[in-house]
Image (cartoon, rainbow, N blue to C red; front, side, top):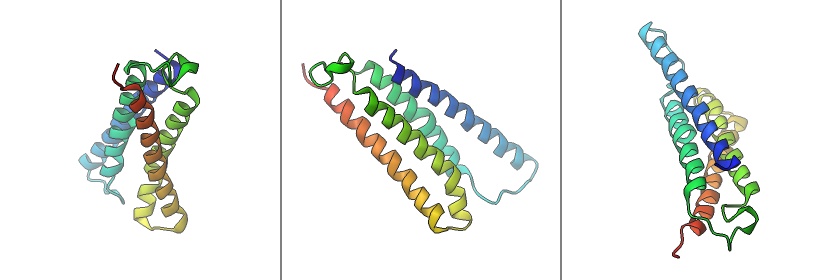
Amino acid sequence: MPVESRLFVKASLLWLCATFALGAILLILKAFGLPLHYNFSNVHAHMGFVGWLVNLVMGIALWFLPVNREKFPENRGRYPAMTVRVIFTMLNAGLALRVIFEPLVDKGPTLFFSATLVASALLQLAAVILFAAIAWVRVRQV
């Protein structure tokens, strides 16, 4: 398995653990009737979907999709490694920013919090578009 694929898969496992840890904390607080100032369901869902599932799918897809040696000769036809590392960084940094700043924006929006949340969304969107561009040229007719 290529290094970049392992990076995505390992990150997905960390996000999976973080998602279940947050879920356990939320359930424990609910069981004891302790109120929260924020409904963490969106953050929790995003951690599970983007953090675990999207990272896992991207990592496995980068490994398993057919190679395109004509388009990516520098990496045995897989992908440009630096671009994939940028995708990884944008996806996970965007998710981390969302996890931190979405509750803060809902508590009391400030220009900085709102701008950071917008940056989070744009980072994740750019990561998905770049990934789709790489995957698109690997899924071709022979």
